Image 1 (spheres, rainbow, N blue to C red):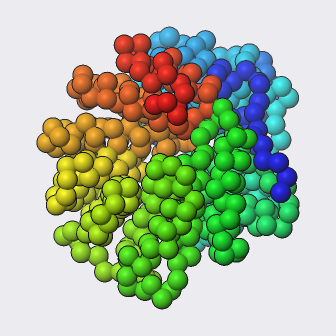
Image 2 (tube, helix red, strand yellow; image 1 turned 90 degrees about the vertical axis):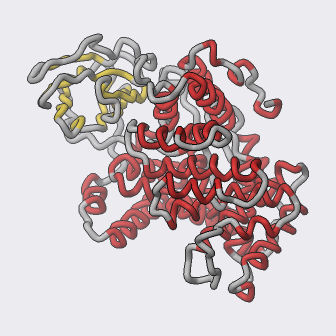
Length: 496
């Protein structure tokens, strides 16, 4: 295998908010021209286009064709600090326009300050960037009404782009689909698996494998696919942990990967379980848990490996293929079979998909499964936290009222953990490399009570240090009021 390395660019992206590789993903630009003039129309449905590529020094005119005022401005809402000059400083009236000339290289996120759910991206480059993707191919997928066929189209597109340009272009295609088709974002985890599958094949055959921080997309599903293939192919976990640390070293400063990678080992070995375990959840988990004890050099490594196992077992309960029968009145019953705390905690963490699945994403009903766990309060709080995190996959835009109200309706012993879970969800679910923007907006929500604002900012700082690049953490910390700084003042994540 060739040396794994990260992809980093020094173009002025204002503290590295978005990795420059996304330029390849966001180059749909039907309005691109050589005149240096471009237009983005705002309607009641949002910006059109939402993705635009321009050259350094080009001018973009924002025209209001909606039924009310709008206010286009740089991220982050509401401070607009990413590119502060990119801000009209006042609303634009109906049928009026405002123009801005881009004299800074980078990829600039923008939004409507009045309705921040409406967002877009403008890529500013020296000479413009050639389209890597066929617009027609994307449109073909988006236009397919049958969801099953559309999913196959997404998968085929990602595979084709990987074959053309390796993992970098595969992730670029993934990011493009994410922002182009809302239904893709709901299913994104499976397509990071696909990229893990493809990357392992490259690795196995001795090809060049370039890994970058995009492996973090959609809760690190890349490692699930990669590790499952490695273990099924070789029949051993030999070298898997070392591979995780090699990636961590190569991506130092870009993202933290050891935990998710080791989680992927547990997930991978369980996905490849012996079919003779049919109908017995404990037998499905047993080989993987023994493996976790062998590869884990710390209690943390053992636990994070075990979360991968229980994540896989939870998915088995929701499938007809494994013979597991779920007691919907006690969905966490399996977790109580483990006396060892590290395994019991891991189970309560990663059975989170089950309550939401059987309650059709109804957060209130799903949380009742957690608070009714006949076990210690500690485990009930863990389950509440993780269900709230998973709930964010179904939350669109910045409409936080239902989620916050549902947490507020819980007893005080659960409410802070529910708020923490929601916060963590916003750091992993969203437009690739821009997830934290909604997390900041969530912490700023006037629906949160003062105590929960502090709770939100503390969890956001913790997650940011473990998830984002050093530059992005710097930005997030700069956007958090100083009185709420905690972990931002102690950046060594291993010491937190």
